[in-house]
Image 1 (cartoon, rainbow, N blue to C red):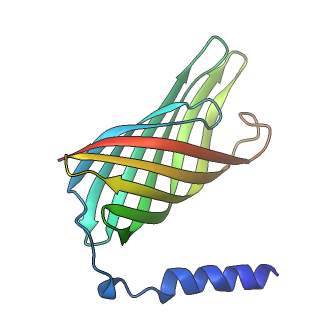
Image 2 (image 1 turned 90 degrees about the vertical axis):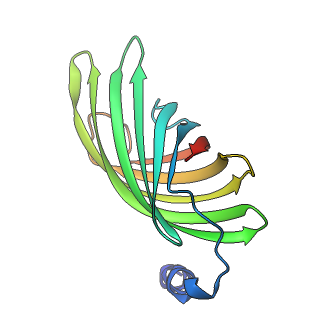
Image 3 (image 1 turned 60 degrees about the vertical axis):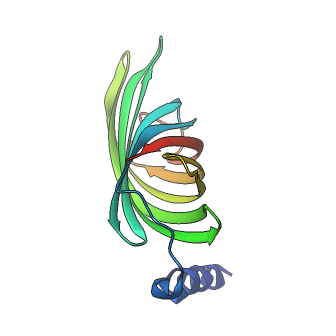
Length: 160
């Protein structure tokens, strides 16, 4: 069963001929917020940078400042953007990140790898709204009870 899932993902990723798709324009830059919840990182500053017709980079800086924990997380993702219809796109990506936390007697740093799957709507004004799902695998047992986190977030970005 696992081999069938891997084969299906490979066909989807490598079987799409991007040059045959009618691409919508990706803005050169987009800056805004990504609001969700992943280990207490409820808000992130988000920046997207155009690379080519259907590719971009995304960088997200999340932070947490509560009574028990102070932390930050920086994640970088490479994304493939594909049009659906009208002003809708879907995207898939992969990346990695680092972070640091201070929880009283327990402090340190961590690393993570992440995937990304989402849908976005590009308004006629310079506004981009998105909803994405980002599974993250962390590498530090002191910060999290388990190493797998699922992050679902709403993004609002100004395009320029």
